[in-house]
Image (cartoon, rainbow over the protein chains, first blue to last red):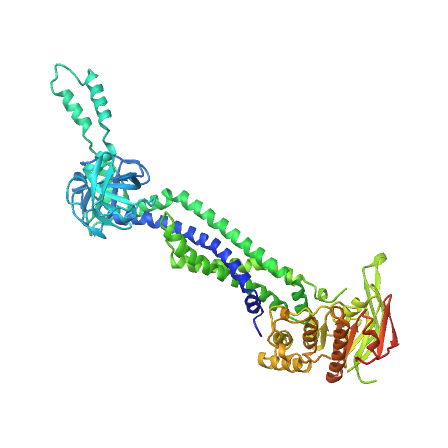
Length: 401
Length: 236
């Protein structure tokens, strides 16, 4: 038996291809939405992976340092370092801001890292060009997504930094590329006030009789000095040894240091379950809406195509064609339309949308397989209305009168 | 008369119930021999289409008896289980418009019926080609319906009606869209095919130019048929 659906498609291939093209763009958007969700999750995991930490020690009762702000003293790391099971510790600061370079500025997550070497928690684990930071001030390593190049001079607050290294896939949970600078500079950028504010604060402190007592020499200078120094970081990153478990070490730090500590799994839960939950829900809603729209479009197209063949269907029924052959003709056309749409959609998502989309779009092969099955199932269900219409056609319609 | 292709006795068809019942056929008697072409004429609303649909096993008559060849297909109820197979294998249809499947070429339009009946594709196409040759249209075998003239399309439709060698062919106004010359050509072909394949052909028509070509004509009026001898003019 010849394939009636195949012949019909070949006969009107232009109509099918252009319809499939339109459907494909819609499927491309749907696949891209799934890719954006995967990208969000991957960004969150990349942030955790790249930090190199097993535990995050943050301000008590906060979800810091990524989901909420967290401030802890920058000398707490010493006590944590001496806890059983702790291999390495490092202070870290995170601040998402506009980093200027010449006339343009780039939104980036500025990360303050302690002195050390690659492998120190918080450090970029690998570079794609240049070198790691070796000086205590005014050097930076930037993610390539910032568009900065080795030797570029960038401005963070009032200080200028020289880009000495480039890294890749170092992003915040929001997808902003990271710029690594020395911790002291980052603390200054995050907590230090501008010169006018410092002068005003000194004036206020001098005018306060509680700090400026004539009979206590040196008190005013001491207070002003304490106000001018910044002793906070956002978190302490902890690597544990191979003997102790993360939960065990975290519990000890919570108990003895009275700080909040998150393990990797808890931090993933915060990032994926809380921080990107709203975005994920929005994307999920878009996915559902796009799937419904795609199904409606396929149903409408197939129904219209079927209505255009009512007389032929009546003739086919009159000359003895089985219902399942007619249903097969319509369903195969719906599936063919879905396949054309999926191929166009996959190409659109992979080659057009993902490279130009401002967010990271991660197109997982498994998502594509799932998408293909979803498209086929949607097409099968969408063809049901047209099949019902075709099966209701009275063969007598082919006979005049 | 030769053995009958189709025999209809007291065929009735009513629509509606109770006070609204309409008797479309009030006891039709017809007999068409194998190899014979008869005309069925009548004004609009006389019951032609209803009779054609009953003969074509598209609608169920209310009473009566129909025999196709030696097989009783209706006797106050269908005597055949699979009406679809009956239509496919034992009844040929030719319509007012050819209604060819637009996405199949000429060969496959004709070969589709045997294919639907389970004949292998190659064999079905051979059968189709043989008929296309008999109808002198084999040179258009690979053409699509849209590329054919009206007369060519009607010849393909005739080939499709004949391909399964049915004992009866029902032709519904087959010459309506054609000019006199082509209309007469179609009737000539139908007569040749009826003779060649021993098929009984009933041609429903209003077409004054072809009515004189029938040797026998059934008139239908108010659901009753009357037989009349035709002129049986030549097709020249």
